[in-house]
Amino acid sequence: MKCLKCKRRSRINGSYICYYCHGIDSLISNSGNINIDNFIKGTQSPNNRNCDPLLQWVPFEEFKDLEKIGQGGFSQIFKATWKINKRINYEGTVKRSSKQTIILKILNNSQNVDTEFLNE
Image 1 (tube, rainbow, N blue to C red):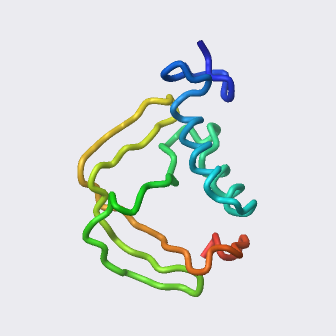
Image 2 (cartoon, rainbow, N blue to C red):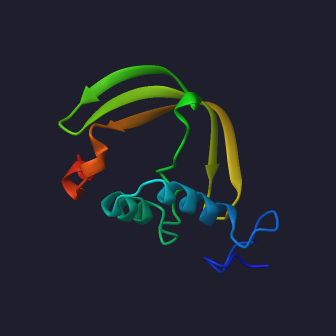
């Protein structure tokens, strides 16, 4: 059967939505801020099929070896190792790899986020 949200991908585990749409829902539902929601939705658009989604919620415990590499007025930037990289691609399949170096952006006072804040 097709996913009820995107109408293209197969649904998962008896659910009515695919892994990809489920991943977007779980990421966006945690925000509570319309500016953050719109920013994330823009990066997760199925129209951007040339690459995997760039934003994803990952529990902090999955990172190690944090090294601060920058700071701005709204955020701090760190280089870190993602212990187990698990991503959902546009076909709705889960890709896994071990130990990947990534960049983390930790937002300061993120409860009052605006577009300037997100674009820093």
